[in-house]
Length: 212
Image 1: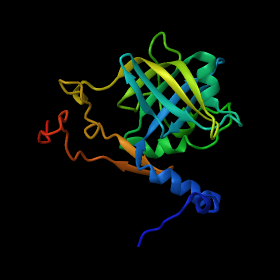
Image 2: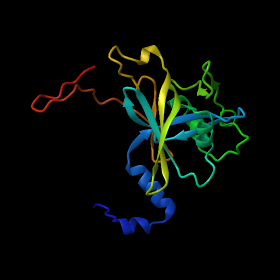
Image 3: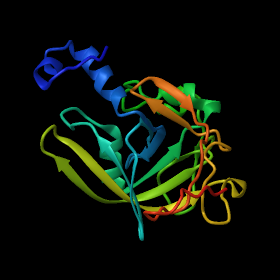
Image 4: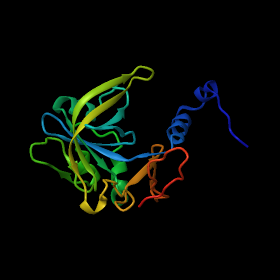
């Protein structure tokens, strides 16, 4: 039997139930820690499940930020300094990463509170997560306000990419399974990925071609 809820019924659900449900129906999402540093040097780290590919030429990534009706340390820091990092979460430290989703005071570094290690690249002010296998340093490029709910799409230009050589194939493909990258379902459930197949560019009329 299927469960069928229209918009009116969804809006009449208990808020926490609705939030859990709607967050989960989008399926598996990325698990990333965004690192920033304030103008005074305080390090900040926050878990996001909304990082998206914007473009490759030139390379841009984005993420969705919740409404700024309350203070968002990540947003304030990246707007003040113009720099932030995106660090993929691996299975080996996903519990520590989840801790960063808590609401810490401005004067508390999530790196220290969660037992993670800041890593710096010369000439770049935002901290990377040393434990992450894929580290990305970005400069703020632009933002777009989503009027229907006041969230923001924040876009950054990739300035630094750090990842293991053995994790990148000859054609640029990144082996996320080998790097133990995890995904998030909803806000609180973590998964490891298993590759089902990789397929070449498809042209109508051809057979689906599997590649390594």
